[in-house]
Image 1 (cartoon, one colour):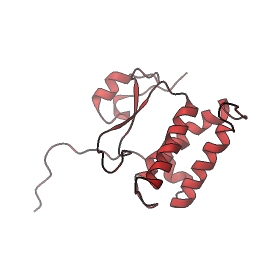
Image 2 (cartoon, one colour):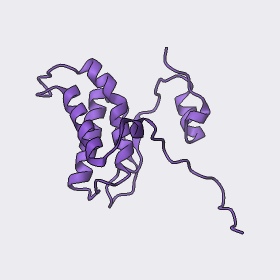
Image 3 (cartoon, one colour):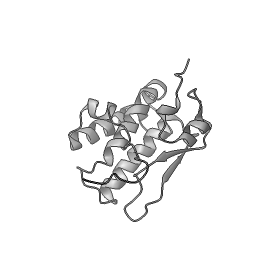
Image 4 (cartoon, one colour):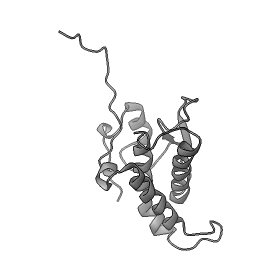
Length: 147
């Protein structure tokens, strides 16, 4: 049985009202906040109908793109959520795509794992860094007056 969520598990109430307490997505898109190129500040979206292999492929492609053409340096903190997302889908990629795939022309699980391992090593991130990563909480209201 999938885990039950509460409204506290979501950044906004609207996310909770669209998703619900069961881990059954109703939304049509996956958002990748902060992953857009420098010149484009809009929210980057992926299709919620992607399987785990496609999600991993999208994340690996994003990471490579931001290094090669995005101008992100290896120390850029925006890599952490992308690598954490890749780490999150890898168990299913290993489970369902752990063998040679003719269409893929390789082993999706091994290639995705290698991309994660390389990404972590280049940024000197531990497994715990990715497991413990959480989105920044937004504060509401005006900032407090300094005394």
